[in-house]
Amino acid sequence: MAQRYTRLSLVILVILSLVYVISACEKDNQSLDTPNVSDLPQNEESNVAEARNMQKVKIGFAMDTLEEERWLKDRDLFKKALESMGAEVDIMEANGDVALQISQAETLISRGVDLLVIVPYNAEAAAAIVEKAHSAGIKLVSYDRLVKNAEIDLYISFDNERVGEMQAEAITKLVPKGKYVYIGGAMTDNNAHLLKKGVFNVLQPFIDRGDITVVYDQWTKDWDPENAFVNMEAALEANDNQIDAVISANDATAGGVIEALEALGLEGKIPVAGQDAELAAAQRIVEGTQTMTVYKPISTLTKKAAELTVSLAKGESVDADRKINNGKIEVPSVLLTPIPVDKSNIDETIIADGFHSREDVY
Ligand code: BGC
Image (cartoon, rainbow, N blue to C red; front, side, top):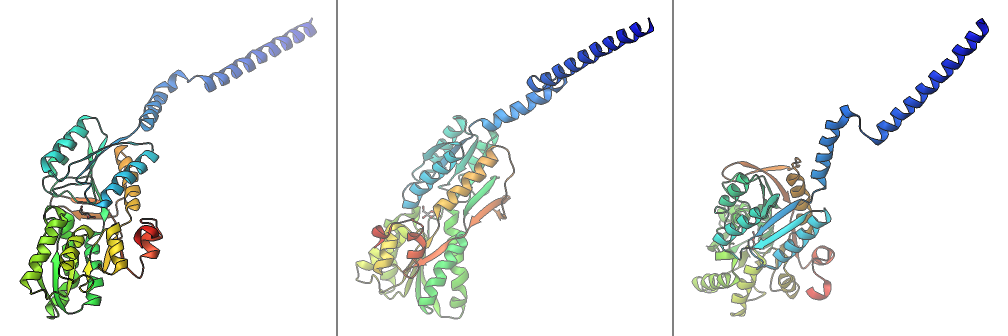
């Protein structure tokens, strides 16, 4: 009898253990396939975060102009860099028109971009765009040119003051004494002021020693080469053609300067500096009518800009190594390093990089 009870309790024990094992397995399966009721809110939260991350970030790019060769590269390479990161971009170009740039920015905002990148035509007037973007809850990145007196979220460019210094360093090496002409950029562009500051950082000690005299110093309205041509003609006329060197704020204006020199048969006789490494300037350098340019690898700028804007648009924090005062705030800034180029290093810089092909330059 006692033995029968023992066997019965053994059977019950086995059955109970089996029920326990099976239910434990089921529970395990359940936790793999379907969420625990208590886990649900957490899962939903992470799903929403994932969905946000998966959503295509849409960037608006409000450009000033496509006039100079470089801006076509900026447009195409920035688009490519953003798309390779899974972002979309909507691009508009204002053709040097303040009011048009403001209305284009409004259009981009109304089309629902997540972030606005702007190359301001007018550094001060563009502050209105920053306010419009911010009141729509959109961050604004200043690209290549700084927006003044506004709470922009990021500024990315090349070190423009350094560009001016590089120009003046190269020219003072060739012409340490004499009469200089400075053909500036557009007064409405903050870069024009930075470039000029850089040039005079280098020239000032020469001026103070009485070795260099700046006999003509003028801005170029809208960066227009025609205006640079007219200004250079005026500089030559006012000085009986006795000019020893010219520093011009970019290659397009340097082109205007060199045309004015050509009219008098002075091309190649007076050193001229520019910047941008435009194809025409590279050709003039190998021909000997332009002394130097400053090369700014645009693809470095567009890649960095794409990386930072996508992060900002996703609400992530970004690494900006510099702070630049724009009259209102200390703007988190990234400034890339430019490269001076003349006949001696054109092959290992702009040609080696594929910025221009050897056949096109020579
Ligand atoms: C840019 C130059 C350009 C000039 C005219 C400046 O702000 O930095 O690269 O040549 O604008 O468009």
